[in-house]
Picture (cartoon, helix red, strand yellow):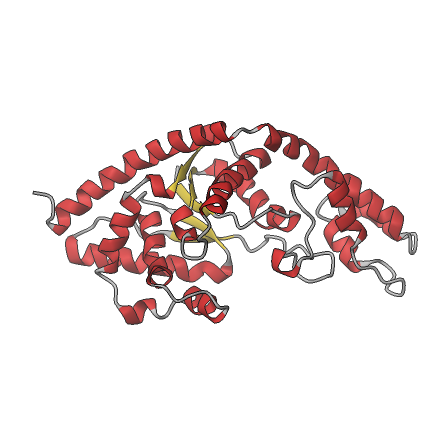
Length: 310
């Protein structure tokens, strides 16, 4: 079985766009691999400097994934900061790549352009990400098309180390799922917290209803396109054909969508509410112990090859 690794970051409450765009595709994918799910807390330090929010985000992202259906007994869910080999290997890799090479990072340029401080950590981010991947002899990493460069960096870092010190690291491949849905927000733009146009994934029924009732509709367009584009993720097109053919019955259609969303979310919401912080700590402790066992063996080999092990 091939090994898969992905990083989990939480930047706030998830919405149904996150569910259909990232969470559900991962749920369908991870049982097919020996899967490692890393809570990327050290990566978050590049932009988050609120300790209380950091702790909350760590708990939240684990609860989100477990509530949505990820089984901790069938994958390794671990905390990046609990496996010190990540930052150790990142330093070794940073000593092999050049500044001009790191300056090519699209993600770095984009974040700085959006106002994020150009720290050394943000600049070196690709090598910590490469270390995350290479430590576990990862075969595949699920990424979006815009993240393809992250895997190119990891492969380049692996090749540089292998050329300098002998075959050590596997060169990972990106797993790009092109069929992943892009869910529109209530205003018709891509659903995003930054646009304030979301339908909350773990919100109350009242919060979901309020968001759905705000979906833009236009009596002159016939079938309400934005409403339909969201609704088709919950029902088949054949099930929606008759209700959407009856004219401008927007209230009826929105009520139907509210019930369909609630039917999906209510069991997950109940499961999430039942997960305690102590249970999250237990999951992360057990997963981090497993990850550390593998990573420490890899770093013993790395230290020997670069000559620091006496």
